[in-house]
Length: 292
Image 1: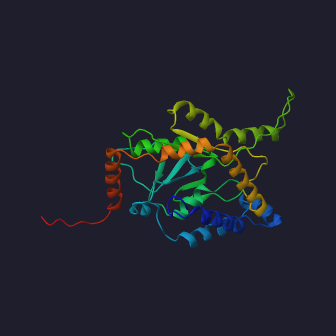
Image 2: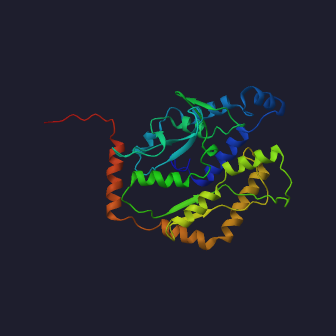
Image 3: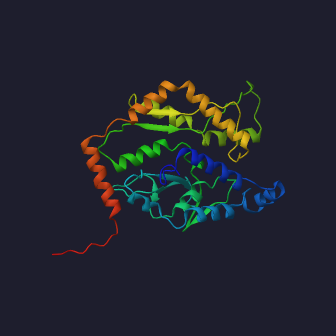
């Protein structure tokens, strides 16, 4: 919504609340039966039909024709190509000839397919079949995609130093563990595995240590309550919003510093390189007839 369609923030919030109430409503009995049948509590077909209705047949790369459109990527996890699992990047940009990303991906997919694939959270929605691949939520493998984004930037602009990296978390909630040396239950072991696999702060710690000062900014508030992924109740969404506002009020200086770095003018070389790349994306596939 923000990147490709540049919808204003207040409208994004309204759409998010509306979509959440439409998608995350399910009779518990029906949902439980669906879990046993398709390993998905919610109606994946309805989610797909909403996406198709809202987005139509627009392909990711088509947004590159808009000179104001930023580079956008969505990440899914391919789960049927053996181990280890593979990340897949749905891009709205092309890489220069000869440049190879470390990650699988393409820009020719439809926008609704990118969202459907990258949001197929296990237990919530069914896996998404795309060609010969089976996609699940990218968070299954890369729950904090900041390092992946930096890698993609290096592929796009190999000679341009990083000016600013802003990483936005979805909030973190820490539980108090009991200081016990007793053996843990199987449920606890599985919970620990899932928690470590979906952790976002390790990537943050690494990037914070490696990137130059005043280049990397991470915003991720501590939550006073653990809010599940499928929460759509008005009062809980209002709570999330208030937690975010409270966090930003406590980090005003950091927010202003981030805005200052983001607002710096681009150099002449960077502007020329971006202009050339934009023209390449805009005219890709357009037939030209030589007058010679």
